[in-house]
Image (cartoon, rainbow over all chains, first blue to last red; front, side, top):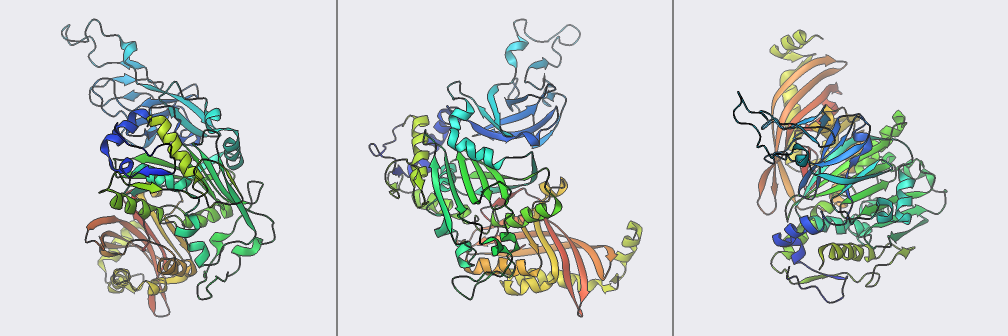
Length: 406
Length: 170
């Protein structure tokens, strides 16, 4: 790839990386099949033997499936015969995988167990004599799960999952996923931009209060907030968080809160209530696990977001919205209300659906021009007390360049 | 009321004491108000405690409670509108709703349960028109102070995906 990168720079990115189909194709090999852990699904989505979920690693369709022994496998969702999709539904339960095209059959671990007419009909036809069924199972990914999150990797070079994420960011997963999970529902948002623009957006703690002005407009920002940005030792993953420094402002959701501009206030601020359930005062925590997972806690709105590229200028963002299995009815109601803040219609997230598209359109004609991201320095370092930094975005580009060998 | 009862009700000009024309008019008023960008009047088509939900067939059919938009009461609906006027950022666009197959399902206290099909075409400022949403609505419509209002409205999108974002109610 003849991509000219500004020498030694993580704070400048050529627009071409968002628009060039050749780079997109290379990412499928070097990045998605490179030394990364790709989020696949949640363990609670496939609780029983035979339960499967269709998912993606880049452009590659993948099945996560639970076998009779309780283990989970990640298999490429493509028949070894002619390459047809085996699972064409989003999820389900099966005893085995049977390709509908020619009835080749695989067990729940991807072994080829049956081939239709393998001995032919009436002694004629059948498999070639040298065909070794053992050599034609489904392609398996490495798989690791942590706290109910299931990841797959195509590469033997990927470090163990916990080492990959790093202790400091693993601790946030421990913090959020403290109890058995249940799925409250799904959102899917089709973004008119390259996947990396959304990946960057999540790591961009600088934009949050500038683009998403709902909180400020309606005066629902709590006083006495503290926060910061943590970055994994690799630079690839990050955590941006805000927390209350004291418990004095608990009633913020229960009253009509006056905004900075007196004319704007919420008629009903009950969705801004926050039941402290994680043992701390953190109100917002956005963690990314490179390249495609976002772990979200916004008040009591818990979710994972999976970034799925759908072409060089199109991205699907899949939100799996979560609660805990022991939530009572009032807690579920609160989660459903606070989820108005996020998702494709989210009061503090919908703008992320358009900004990527604006960059995509504006960048198209000038691939060799560059973005510039100098906020908080030029390197990839954590930030205590301030989220006004682009360090985590630079960390994304460090990961991207290391995977892409650029 | 049994299904057969609901069926016979459909054939009549009245459903649960509400003239069928008035139900159709409420749906008409609802979509014109949105498509004409008179959104400040939108919450007034609901009762004070009404629920308004937009969800997908994927979630609805699996019994998953998550909604794209969930308003419990008129206050949250008004907040949605003031947010899109003052806080949210999006490219200007308009909807054209097509509503059909309105059916009264049963009578309930003070009103009826009804359903409809809809298609919403979205036109962007740049001129592109696309099918933005289609699906069904499941509604409870009641008589209140001499006029009809929605006491509950659940909009179920056929697609699991939203193109770009959803800001104007459906």
